[in-house]
Length: 301
Ligand SMILES: [Zn+2]
Image (cartoon, rainbow, N blue to C red; front, side, top):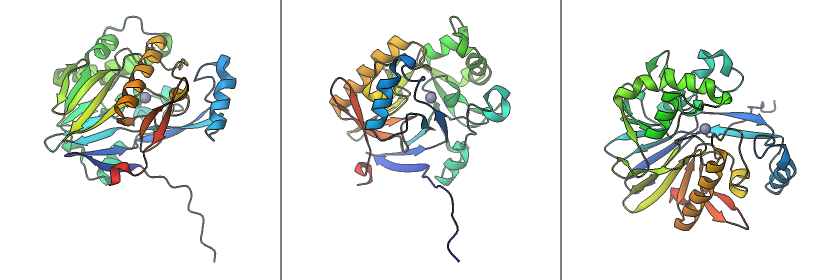
């Protein structure tokens, strides 16, 4: 008897040491989306995007979009950045065909952590795929955690002024999921320290108050840039292209260039929420743009 086909298999957990910290990338979920165009750069840039895809040996008509929260154990506190999609799909009819079911808690268990172990939940921003796993059936998923929310981001969604049509439902979700937790939250702004070794960086644009975070232990540095880049080829090589899900398109493009420049100059290891799993890599400057250099084994040594 020939061996039976077992179906595709893909890793979802990766852990490494950064100085005295342990850092774990956990893929909450992923979707296969249709077309880099028009999401990246609209129809006007379809040919350019197709050419970039071809040169990088990826399909321009279908792309993998992973959701990868990051867990940092500083030795004193267990810090979770973003919470994935959680049960949004089950709880909201509108999201059924848009978001996959979240697996963060199940995969954290595989990695050796219980939800009760999390001391701090940091939200980089308020988009559904980052806040979805905070609560289930209205109850906090991480019962012992305190929260760190971006102050500008919180103000924007809480006030609800100038929310564009496409984000009205996002605002409803934020008010339902995040706002009730404000009494256990620290409101953070760029430059603030979250816990010793972790500091917020201005990445405003993709969302009104998106925060990136530098992570440093024993002289080893990295950055969690969250959603600064949406796609590892297009966002890096053409940071100027507007992305449909960027809330402030001009600011998002300027932020991409500023952060890519900083990362390339400082040769930082990057964790990116939507970069190919394990979401880790480096940035090189190229002609006019940048390129993503995926992590290989640097952090295994
Ligand atoms: Zn996202």
